[in-house]
Length: 348
Image 1 (cartoon, rainbow, N blue to C red):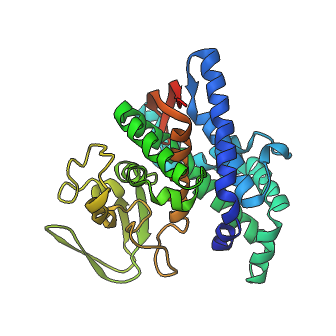
Image 2: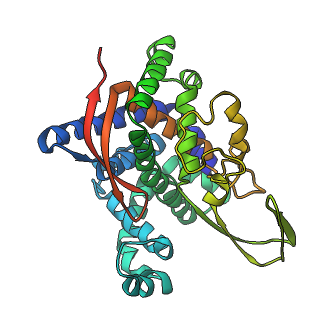
């Protein structure tokens, strides 16, 4: 069902992304002109949900009963699901018993969840019909559509786009200039349009996206029970795991391995350009090597390639429009809180 969603939306993704994120940038520019700064996160989340509605469901959520409440409803639901992993900056003696000791009662967010359910039930008819042809009930299909779009995709964008903006912003004007030249040159060579072929001619842009995923994986923690006895090897040790034992994985242990990556704690924009592509097999943000794909037999992110695609599109649309930008960064329970302090429009 998930792959049907992705396949059926393929012709809408690029044009709807361009439309939606140009709307986002228009709004950020207006806020910047009025206030001298513009918070990316809230506006970015509205744009993300609007894009996903348009791309997957051919519907702008803001023109439906749910209005602009979608991101707020999703964020509340995600908070309750990820509470044990979050840090809100409260004193430990408040945060530990409140978030990390007991499961938050689902009844508190049932009303919000039902609003999301009703939205997806109303606007997901083709996906639901396909699910029913596979023997999946309508109710189960709607729950899965909601989870896929809201938790997996929207939740990923909520973390990944601000983090990507943060790392590129901190890298400075020299990188911005290189990205703008590469991106605009490739688009010009492909008829002035953003296409898959054009993006394949942007090695620095692709490397920057992979480096963002490497240095700060959007989902840093994984859990799973061993289905059989196995051994896990590191560079210098072997660990025996028994069937049924709980495994915990912390992505940065792998993605910042100093025996694999030079200057692992630094954001190196061109790390994966040219011969550096060989290192992609060690980029495991998707719960598996970047050089491999999801299958029925593994737990790799089913939307792995979609996440890479839309993050590339985000960087492309950013530098298609701007020469450079400046930011301020603060901590956030999920990802970074990014405030834009300047946006320098592309010079004709």
